Amino acid sequence: MSSETDWLLEQVDLLAKEHGFDVTKLTVIGYSNGANVAIYSMLEKYVQFRNAILFHPMALKESPKIPRLPENKVWLSHGDRDPIVSADNFEFLVGEINAAGMDYTIFNHQQSHNINRDEMVAAKQWYDEHIL
Image (cartoon, rainbow, N blue to C red; front, side, top):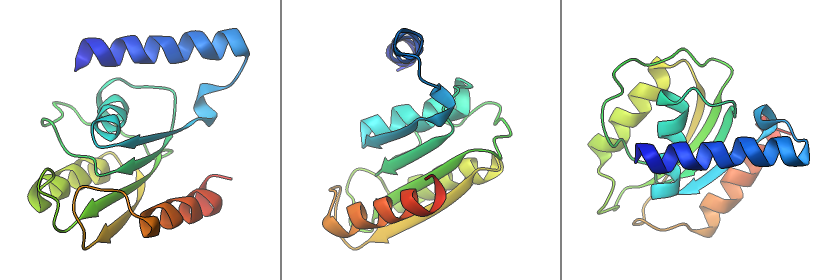
């Protein structure tokens, strides 16, 4: 995942320069593997963006050295019947986010590895209250 993630982050930086926007103001939104890339980037790549909405992220590996990121805000969702992201894996990821000092909110639901309306509404409400 590292080389693809590096390429993606380089593209974001290039676009930010080309279009004159501040990467620190971005809120990254990802679902499943997209969410994994976003949180991996935050924990291991020292990216400039500070906010993320992550639908069904999972820990892919243990971060060797967790940075202190108290300015970061993350919203995460998890389905109790998710066959891809186990409860243990999700809790491990939350532990790493907590160890980084990030401000985080968790949305749990009783469904599978899918995005549902309640998740979308909760993510938007969190964004409106914490980011805007």
